[in-house]
Length: 125
Image (tube, rainbow, N blue to C red; front, top):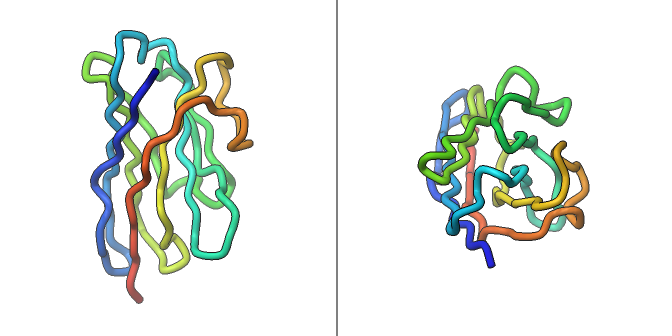
């Protein structure tokens, strides 16, 4: 069983930045592909981006390219989501997820095996 705990959410003004962290339990974090998703009220959970187990490859939803950066520190069992130039439409609960099977981050939420509880990000205009 893998436990994921997100942190770093909060309230920020438009144009600001936040860095989310996702800490994982267990000894096999370095073998997991990790993804970040977000879910706004009344909407479905959407792929933000993901990172390969080694950290060498990252993938982003089109609307995140250039503003969001995903990285990981396997020595700390942690994956990060750096969010810059935030917009009110980025307001959502952000989740990290672990995929223990695939090498490339999947865009479908149901492809992931473990989820964190989420952290709220609110961007004011």
